[in-house]
Image (tube, rainbow, N blue to C red; front, side, top):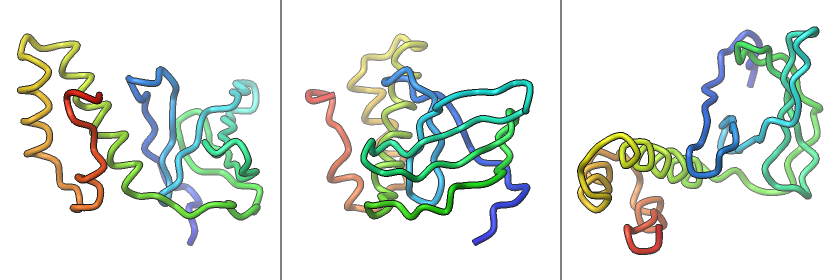
Length: 125
């Protein structure tokens, strides 16, 4: 699969206060930025995994180290992280109760049953 010149969705995950990149079911954390080279280094969120990728400062895919991940991709985890970030963003900016916001977002979410079963409830959030 070629990602050359592909712009990758990158955004802060509000609950972890880290900038994450989601690609092909894997989550990467920003490792370092080298502005002089217009390059961002991303490492796999699994500390034991040695896979990493590089993007430009504007999130255009450049390269990777061609090291395979030591774990399977988890699309459900990406969906759940995005769901949690959306709920937290709304809770911080709206006057509705967290329970109402959670219910509304869960109703809008287009997640498979396996992801919905693992999504956080208001109590264990």
